[in-house]
Image 1 (cartoon, rainbow, N blue to C red):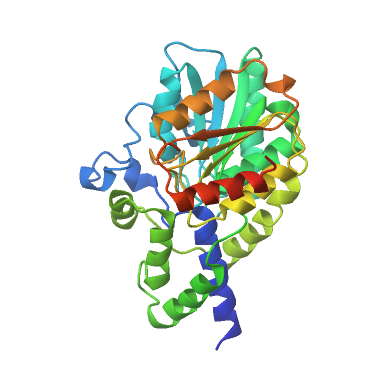
Image 2: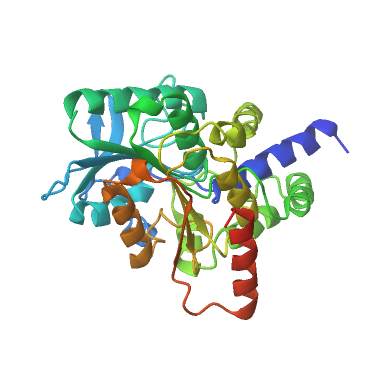
Length: 355
């Protein structure tokens, strides 16, 4: 079998796994109000509040709370998504007094047809986020600033906070993906898919990944039918991304700002145990591991959070004593009705995280 074909299949499918989802959403046509509402059952139109606006020539999600608590967040989406994925969470945070922004990673969002923003570029995205954080620090010096990232966004948040800890008061990272479940099986399916179903979107491997990412039919349908979805990346993008994500645990081991790691117990795409071990490696004394007993891979985006998760996020960000913590903290939410097997997995997860 062609060696390049094998490598390409593995790279593309690994990227899909890291992303948690395959599609790319919130491209220009999705932000257009003429798009059929049937394609937006899970997502939300960019013209609705909170809105996608243009700041400095770049589309960005922005919201202002009517009752500001002097806290602002910058949200980074997972691979395949865009800033719009945080609209439901933004509405909840706004009610809690928290302002914020959702930034589009380069290669995604309404600007992906513009020069310099066509391809996925984690390094330049880091610079984009860093500039935004610097601007917030300058314009709102009395505000506390937090980074929020899920999957790829979690990896980006970890690296930014590790390299520029002075720009944030803490980070929240959900399922910062770097270890995958069923990797070999998915790679084999991917090789078959590229050979036999080159034009299928998605083929057998892609659909298998969708089912690993979520058990919710409406979310799967949203990913499959939205006209802006993109199921394939270039070989160069895939290679660069894998090189970037491979270093996530290394950067996590240097984190000093307060950290809240969020993990769905029922994540079938990224290994919860690997995330727990990453949490154990984080040197920050002010670190919390929040486990969602009903959560899958996506916990913060696309409205997949529960009230208990939002309550935990808000309470953590509003805690004025974060930096005074000296021991790791562990929180469980939505864990009242776990099965016996789920309870065993939870115990192993907590053990791996150092409890």
